[in-house]
Image (cartoon, rainbow, N blue to C red):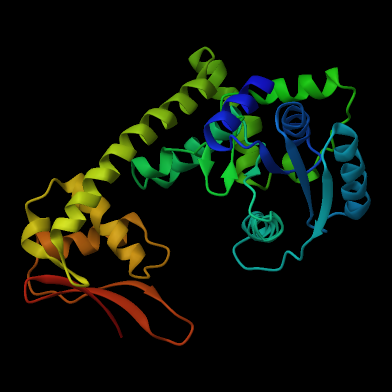
Amino acid sequence: MRRAVREWLARYAPEGVVAVALSGGADSLALTAAACAEAAAVDALIVDHGLQDGSAEVAALTAVLALKLGCRSAQVLPVTVAHPGGPEAAARQARYAALDAARQGLPVLLGHTLDDQAETVLLGLARGSGARSIQGMTAFDVPWGRPLLGVRRAVTRELCGDLGMNPWEDPHNSAPEFTRVRLRTEVLPLLEEVLGGGVAAALARTATQLREDGEVLDGLAEELLGAAREGAALRIETLATAAPALRRRALRAWLLAGGAKSLTDSSLRAVEVLITQWRGQGGVAVGGSPTGTRLVAAREHGRLILRSE
């Protein structure tokens, strides 16, 4: 645990001052303990989602424990979870917004482990939206740091036991109505049994390999995008002769930069058809707004443009 945090700090935060998202669970408790042993200063940020009775008391006790572990500060962040998209997504959105607002410019360490990475890869496979969706989580996606992506969940629990800490067990982490919980408790154990073990590590390793490949492809796609630019538009001829993998990556970057929302693989490929199989068809909607306008990618005079309708 200490080595994982030490290596992360050396690469991404050599000054050694970080915040840590502390839920009171085993992963974040173990991460906080290791960070206090390795970092110059650690600020604990404890988000209280208010979704269970007594959550405020749990948060307060967790803050006390953070100070005992050696954090220079411990701040409880009460949030209101009241957004569309399901309880998991709503809680995540509220949590990350609170952490971002309270971090005071520091990177925030998250307790995601190798097991979490494996679950993320399986979820990406189920979506079927290409290699990007199974690249998993990165070690540092500013401002979010994940030092434990090479550490098993069992190790964090072992460390908590060694230090005499009793982690808080979030009831949501065992609720079968959540897809990730069923992956954790049913799917991954079955895969480990059927395939003879090592599945979680193999999935995490696959994510790392795909992410490394993806970084190279993204760099090449950026070069293609630069060559195709003509003001705010893109030259069709340049894109049409490019390799499909690079063309789609360039299109994705251009659409997102132009304001596209919730860009799916199907909508991206529909835009690509405007380049490769154009038969005079109209544009493709790639986003909308509450005011009723929508963003449309269209072909016009040998160029690909974005316009509002």
